[in-house]
Amino acid sequence: MWTRRDFAISLAAAQQASAEPLYFDLHIDTPSRMVSEGLHLGESQPYHCVDIPKMRQGGLNAGFFAVFAPARNITPVEAVKQALKITDLIVEEIKRYPKDLFLATTSQDVLRAKKENKIGILLGVEGGHMIDSSLEVLRQLYRLGARYLGLTHSGNTPWVGAAEYPDGPKGLNDFGKQVVREMNRLGMMVDTSHASDQTFYDAIETSSTPILNTHAACRSIANYPRNLTDDMLKSLAKNGGVLGVAYFSGMLDDAHRARFPELAAIGRQRAEVVKQFKEDHKRLSEELWELNLAEVKLIGQPPISKLVDHIEHAASVAGIDHVGLGSDYDSIGLKLPKDLEHIGKTPNLVAALKGRGFSSIDIGKVMGGNAIRVLRKAEEKAR
Image 1 (cartoon, rainbow, N blue to C red):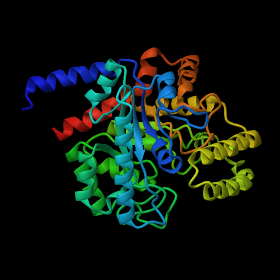
Image 2 (cartoon, rainbow, N blue to C red):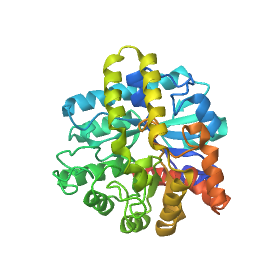
Image 3 (spheres, rainbow, N blue to C red):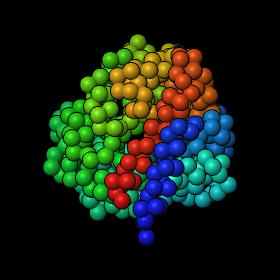
């Protein structure tokens, strides 16, 4: 039975964690590549952004691995089945490497990962289409370990509008608000990545706990539709939530994104490679890696300072307590800042933040302290 003393001990430990150096990434997309390319986390190859050796090199303590299915071109039932398939894949992969990994579901697990020198893998469901408009499915995903749900992805559902698809709902309808309230009851965090601006505001108004935007950046610096405006950043701060600043170069630098049309021919080659080597996972990874290198050779990469610009701006507008990291590794190829090509290079980001004048305490908040606070708040509400 949960006692008042247990709660006090848990709260004290979690509060202490916000001041500890802790690296907690809010969004890692490696599971999709585990499906399509047969990658294993214990095997380090140059074409992996995230594997156990690189996570160790980068100092990762915990990270949300994305449970993802496309929001378009498949039926809702197929999306639910894909969510279950990827959840199972992640759990089985964790079991393959018990000395390094474990399935984490609580803020205490994140602290335990650091204490035991392991990496806590948490599950984040990237898109509300994967519940097929069913609270029962939502609850089952929570029971399987999912600790946040992205309300939408690149496509609309019947109950929520997406940022890049204005033909759908403007925001959350009544059922969408019911989903948010049920997530609050369960202790599941609300993620507004990929959601429309109106959905973002509706989620903040509806949620009784702080929300996340696990992987985006600042629209006043780079005019990308999924990035947050300054008003959204201020609203996020009032809510107590956290923006996980993404590493995707198209979100960070307008001038760099303007060169993406130059990559069209390489994009067509990528589609052919995926079709040609679908059954040969190693060859597929190698061929895709060569195309990623070709993209870098053609249009380059933004400097790491561009990412720091977004972190600094979010901290100045929302406050340092509302900024985290959501790398989006392994879904964006090498469209990444220079010197952050994989998770093992994370010390370069820490050095860049120090060079910009961030204190050690503030760096600790950005690297993971703020993220664990939001997870803890969701747990407290559920209790």
